[in-house]
Image (tube, rainbow, N blue to C red; front, side):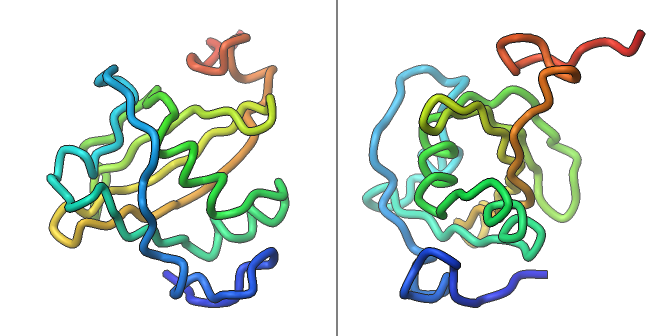
Length: 137
C-alpha cells in the first residue's frame, strides 16, 4: 500500500516530494542505483514510500532525503531478483555515522523505486561491517 501524506519533517506532502534529482555518482557497479541503468533523463526517479517505511523513518528519525542519499550512494549488499511484484534489494548506507539498511523495489517500467523498509541493523545479527548476516549459532 502506498500512501501520500505529509512527511513528519516536511511542509510538502510526499506526493509533492516524490520526484527527486539524484546527485552523486559512483563508478563502482556494486553501488550503482538502478535508475542510472534505466537511462532516466537527468538521473531523476520517482521515489515512493510504503506506510511501513514511513513508520520506520519516523522511528529512526530519517527524512526522505536521507533515504534517497542511501539509495543513491549506498552499497547493494543483497539482491532479491525474484521478489514480486518487482525485484528488490537491500542497500547499506551511512547517515551521520549510523549504518542503515534500506529495502527497496524497482519498477523499471514506471521508472520508480518503492521504499519498503528502513532500519538500523542489529550488530548481533550482522558482521561488524553490516554487510553480511551472522550465521546462527
